Length: 93
Image: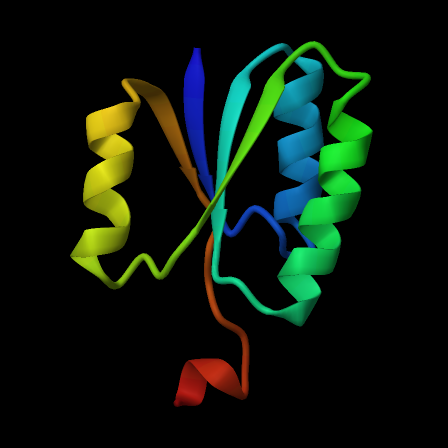
């Protein structure tokens, strides 16, 4: 079962990803690529190797249609766990 997880490499996202992977789901993890999310994604990829689910990483901005459209063509998501959000000061921009 494929699940789209937005904000996958934030503070909450990485723990949600691990729980989903541990439950055996195929997690399509999506986030905005930056130094911090790259570091967390690398760590999560290593941790996920011992879990029953699979992890696929996609970088992109949810506010842009060209980011989402290919995902919905490639996958048939059973669920979307949307936890992507921005905290200040970025949310104010």
